[in-house]
Amino acid sequence: MRPFDLWSHEIRRAGPGALAAPPVLLLAITLMIVCNGFGAHEGSAAWMLLVLIEAGAPLVVGIAAASMIGSDRMLELQLTAPTSYRSTLLRRLAVTLGWTGVCTMAGSALVIATGWWDRLGDAPQGLSAQLTWLSPALWMAALGLFASAALRSGVAATTLLAFLWLAEQMFGAALQENPVTRLISLFATTQKITPEDWLPNRLTLLATALLLAAAAWYLLGDTERILGGEKE
Amino acid sequence: MIATLRYEFLMQVRRPVMWIVYALTVAVLLATGPGFSTLSLGGSDARDAKTAMVLLAPIMMTLMPIVYGCMLADRLVRDRRLGVDAVLDTTPADRTGRLVGKYLGACAATAVPFLAAYFARALVYVVAEGRPSALGWAVAVFVTTVVPGLLFTGALALAGPLLMPPMLFRVLFVVYWFCFVVIPPSVLPSPSYSIISPEGDYMRYGLYREGLAEGEVYRPSTAYAALDETGYFNFLRPDATPATALLWAALMLALALALLALVRLHAARTES
Image 1 (spheres, rainbow over the protein chains, first blue to last red):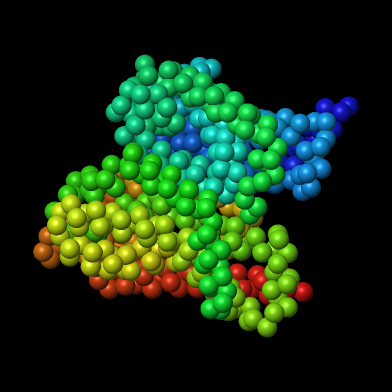
Image 2 (image 1 turned 90 degrees about the vertical axis):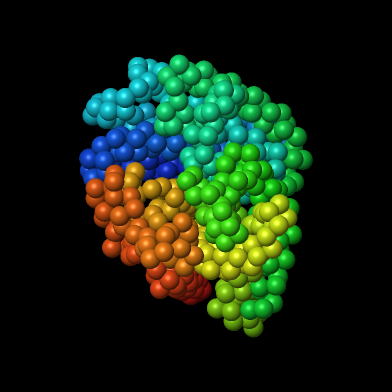
């Protein structure tokens, strides 16, 4: 019974923002399909749908992860509980990730079923198509957790993530020119990376996400780091 | 009002994380954004001091207001969360004055690193190219292009989190900036680069006439027409002239004031 209680608690603790944003994303995708891209050029509309799938989920998950640490009341008390705080955080992150994943998967299924996916030209096909959003989402979540643990401030971490997301959107094409930065370009699918570089890019993102998460896990072991830092 | 302004300014300007975040983002801008180091945006080259400084504004205004807005987003809701607003309400200070002081103080403080990055780049240009007149242009462009945009963005960032959790606001703020300010209308029909979007193209083309030949008029409504077949928001895109540039600045101020009035009404409604 205990794990169930913990999970249901974490679902409620994830916050209205983290619970509301993924369905809004799904709604945006649905509206875009129903309204035929709001009258935009067909190629542009298909591209915008891909942006919603590839970049929407990372933004939601990343900012949710970055604003998670230290938002609990009576944190001192929680830190003395037998359940370690970092596993609580991971559970909460899993709730956000899972919920966003469900919504994004539904959205991408909708895009594939209505044939918009095929209008993208060389977009990845099959099961690996889901890596389009999964890799950047995990990477942003890991970075969010790491940044808020390292900077000890949720505001700073969310701001950095917001900036990085937009910078990747604006200057991501410049990252494609260098073979090293090409591997860690977050929104490579929308920025039309060459098809043979796509899978290495997605796998590198997953691997670096794992590294970032491990670093965050290590930093979160220090309770003083969680208690201290900037109180907004 | 002056006391609140002074206090809010000092409180924000002494926040170490604000400086850390700005330093990191300027580093990213230097490393990846091709514009900041070369002062050029694609086709247009920085041929003279005026053009270079006019181009510096859109280069900064594309990304940096995200940092500015996100760092400002918690300023107003913070008072309520910490419970100090109840204490402040008992002081004789006028509520409207306190709100204006908070707005101006916090915005000014958050704009300090922005200003530092902007003028540091201008100074580097002056030293490297030996054109001191660039400093004058930098001040003029900052006051006319950057300040109105930042005043509006600041009011938006203060007002938004009153309606929703700050986390959700930051997500929506980024979405707003991406979809309604920086994305070309040819990709998504939206009021970007129009007279109500804060990035300041009207000043760039209307007042400073960047890259325009003698007698040529920049028409935002047709600039993207090659791909944008809808033109839904073209009624918000009059031709860029000095008059529309001033209208843009006035609109930015008016929108900021309207947002602040809403914040004040919201405070009045929750007073009891």
